[in-house]
Length: 503
Image 1 (cartoon, rainbow, N blue to C red):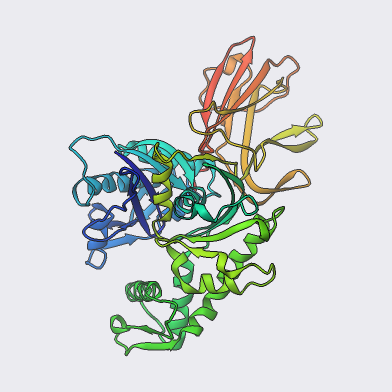
Image 2: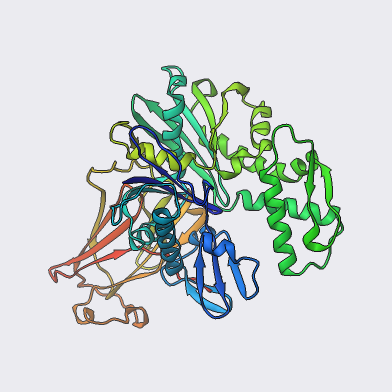
């Protein structure tokens, strides 16, 4: 069976390829599966539906918004749950393994015992290579056969193409995907010609989503109802209530009502415009990103803005997009997916459907490079190995390969790789994400040394010839193979993020 899976900050959604249809999997009658983890003081862990069921029971701690941890995580990063450390990578694999079991036994998907599940999965457009590796590894450990890894707005573009292909014309062949999820915001400009979706550019905000809207509404309610000195349990219950009420807001909602039974208070009510005023600065940040994404394209060439993502159903989003007159955009071209929470999963399923015949031309969303010594050690320069916007290979095509060759000037190579959102004067700028340092022995006497990071680095005049060979996969993950001549030492490194302190 082929399934598109959108692992989200709040929920995980799956859509199945079924003879030209793409039904969304339902779990116990609900079209989403909670992306939460519960830990007990005894050390027991529960995931998804089972975690949500015990979230209010004594002795259990609930980890929400787990996906937000992945952006800063490395293979050894840990998080504290119920007083115990757990590797993020292990939690991720455990969460997806439970999702697979629930897909098999608690959903409306007709899976035969032992049937293979071929999956297309997604990550935020602004995700680092490390997050992409962690995602691929976790799905593989959980027992999924991953066919493709797509950026979330790119996947949503296939859902648009499936539903609204007739809006594309020779004069309007661009679609702007506005993807506001529970934890991240992404915007991508896609050019749609025939059955090919080409990603022109992507931008995003790594920590802006429905969670942040919930936090603003919580502050509004606490101040309006004069709720002070709430303990953690009461605040968590109130946050859950605010989130549920936010999701129930519709275009015709006039007042916002919150049940305060959990804190022993009468209900709180305010005009919906107060809620919109609290959240509008967040929406304004997303609209600012659209201007960067549209650089080089004209509004007149855009068939539509397609609003997707779990938080995209909040009416304020469409209202502010349609009210933004700076570019005099025709408000009729602002479309919201009929299933904003499932648009990415459905798009992934469309992509997997051989009969649909769609193809994707993707681009790298961040600069990737390495710091190097310059001027005989007097300075440091940055070498942008793979620049932002470079065309990535399609699935089934050879990977993108970049090489560097030089004569080693030290006994040990210390490689400091980073990703960044932009370059300024040739140096990383914006949000910069460092990777675990890579050490490589240029001195043959150090080939068997496993503690190169603690050895002194010395200059040498008789270093070997070095080749760096970088391979970039269709999903945007990076591997580097280092080799020397004439010593013929070769080692391959999968680049991973720094292991941070416990979250």
